[in-house]
Each structure stands twice: as C-alpha cells, then as structure tokens.
Image 1 (cartoon, rainbow, N blue to C red):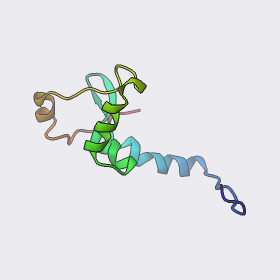
Image 2: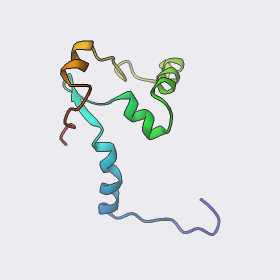
Image 3: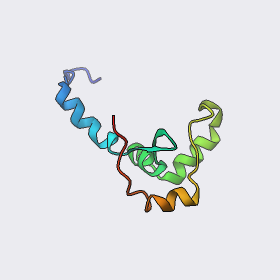
Image 4: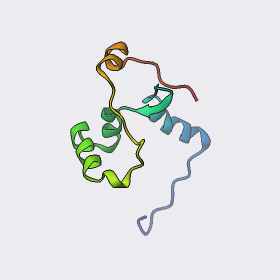
Amino acid sequence: MHKNRLPTILTNNDMEQNLEPIRSKIYEIRGQRVMLDRDLAELYGVTAGNLNKAVKRNIRRFPPDFMFQLTKEEWDSQNAFSVSPATK
C-alpha cells in the first residue's frame, strides 16, 4: 500500500460485481467445476500457451487433479465451449 493512500472498502454488492466476470467463466465438466485455460490466462494477462508452459514447468506445485485435457469429443459436443456456466 502507498503511504498516503487510504484503503478501499468494498461492499458485498461491489464484491459480487467484481466476481461475476470470474463466475461466468466457471463451467461444469465431468462433474467438476473448472475454468478453461484460455479464461484463466486472460485473468492473469498471459497467453494460454504460456500459462500451460508455466504449469508444466512447476507441476509439482499443483495437486494431481489440478488440470485435465478435454477429449475431442468433449470439446466438439460443447460447440467450442459455448456452454452455460456452472451454477452456484
């Protein structure tokens, strides 16, 4: 925090609005709530390729079920992922 800067206080409504763009990118696949690499990469401001490379370089830092790859059939059946987001 900067010296002369007051902290910002967010209301519950503010937090809900800030979280909505993230929630809208959470899908249910294979019975699990997941985010696609492209959406996660966008949140971090990197490419999906670079995100995947970083995860592979540091794979020991992640739990075994951290990620999985969609099959071609899963991808095709979701029409290139125009699926509806998971519900709460």
